[in-house]
Image 1: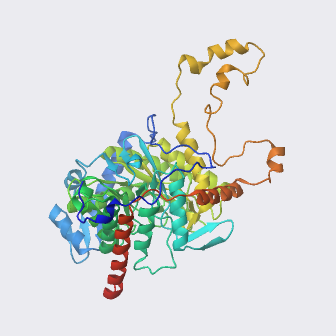
Image 2: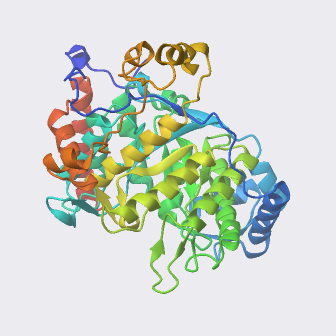
Length: 516
């Protein structure tokens, strides 16, 4: 494998290696697959009705695309483009053509090959939260995020094995200039974890290209090689209802041109940005996804692009977004059926509207995660750390979510009914009225027999009280601190770090000089 730039410094010893035994018990890093049939809540006829209604929206109402480059691409694709109004309309034949031949699976290549991911089919990928402006923990409460918080979050995302993917640096570092903070965020992602990445900012062509170039440097590959061996799971949001703005369009096109998988995710909140029914919101969501896929395919035919789900509802009393609701769960399941109809992977999210790490945060996230697992969602974005409707990144919530996801992962391990597991010899040894604590069958497997939690406390009341009577949230606080104390930076060539440093410095100077 060759690089576009080489350096004699590449032969230096790696910075560090993963050698330390953690005091926190957790499952090993591993692929998670769902061996069971996907849960389906609408019929094939109803699914087709959603598709046809979405096509009708695109044919009769259209989508406003606020980006000249996208308008030119869509015109070349055969869409009906009005340059004055920026309204683009698609007929059914064009949509059928756009949605034909898309990749049903793709591979995301991590810096550590052992953490490379397959997305699609029955594979589940858990990615940490991205996007919040605020950070929260029990020690300092809710506050504006900093670059130090970003670095600590990436370290935790690296340390927790259940998270397959660093989902986007966790939060916005509001102590850095908005024009260039994406460079520092990507630097943290690329150097502090060897898991695969989500580019943190795609809201301009230049920022998207920065993320792509930094990823290429971190992997030591050419642009052509990275297009063949993608490194990112990227994503954009439409501006619901029925608008694709220039910033998101730029990010979408740049990722498509670079051959990086990108999900198109409408932000359809029923009653606010979409009709006040889940059925109508799903139709609108689907129309916006189809339009976004068309832009990506117009930029680079055959590039990996997948279905983004984020349909939920608002609280009709206050107008506030509601998450982890029954409506959200149903919209996940129908969206997954739509993605399978089109033969493409799907992303959804672990969500809650709770402002703190409490019972509400747990049961709303549990509702979200179960619906994703049951419906075979391929990428669960915001799977760890999301709080307060996505406004807050929480260190304690990251640990709570790890417990939920570990439990679901263990639940998906199939039962094996062989002679040894069915335990006839153990029952013979113990006989009627005995107990199995000292049986040979028990002693041979007592260390590995059952799932061991990362957060739950299964001791009796007296033992729990004597040990400090800590709640789950308080225990989560201790766990993330322990993980940070134990953290060791994964191996990385010092010359790669030096090249990334140089790139960041150069681009910051250009941004200031050019007023980007």
